[in-house]
Image (cartoon, rainbow, N blue to C red; front, side, top):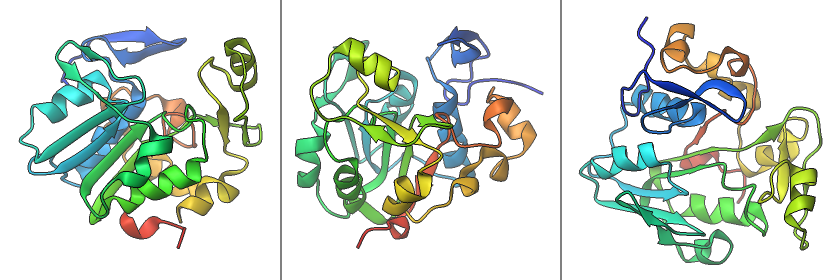
Length: 235
C-alpha cells in the first residue's frame, strides 16, 4: 500500500509533539488535516467555484485551496502573518464573527482554534454556522481530553498557569469526551461515535494517509467533524 500525504502527495514524514511520523515533512500536514481531506474527497468536494472561510490556515491546506479556482478564499487568524506567499487576514472570532454574511460560505474550516478564543465558543460556533450555505460544510477539530471534564477559564492567566491548567500556554479551555453530550453535542446534533474515523473509512484508507491506529476508534484531537446546516442544535 502506498502511504502518502493526500494534501501534497509526499511520502516524507517527521515526528511532531512526541508522535512518530505524525507530520508531513513536505507540507506540514498533521493527522487531522489529512483526515479532513479524506472526508472532502469522499464527498467529492472541490474547492473550485466555492466560497471558503478558513481559520488559522495550515500551510499545506492553504496552498492546496489557493491553487484552486475559488470564488472567494477568506483565510483568517487573530495574529495574521504574511510569509511564504501566505496571506492571512486579521480576524477576531469573538468580535467579528457576528458580522459574517448569512448563508454565504460553501465550506468553513477551523482546526484547533476554539481552545484559544477568550469568549463563549457557543456564540462563535453559532455565527460561523449561520454564515454557512444551506448545502455547505462546517469542518472542525478540537483538542479533547479523554477523562477530564470540560473546563475553561476566561479570566487573565499567565502563560505558565495556562500551560499547567490546559496543556498549552495559549489555551483557555479543555474540551472533553466525558462531557461531549452537554457541550459540543448541544451546539450540534451529532453523536461522537458517528465520527470515529473507522466508522467512516476503511483501515486501508486510514493507513494510506498515515493516520494513527490509536485514533481510529475514538474521539480525540485528530477527529474531524463535518457538519451540515441542519446539524445545528441551536434554534
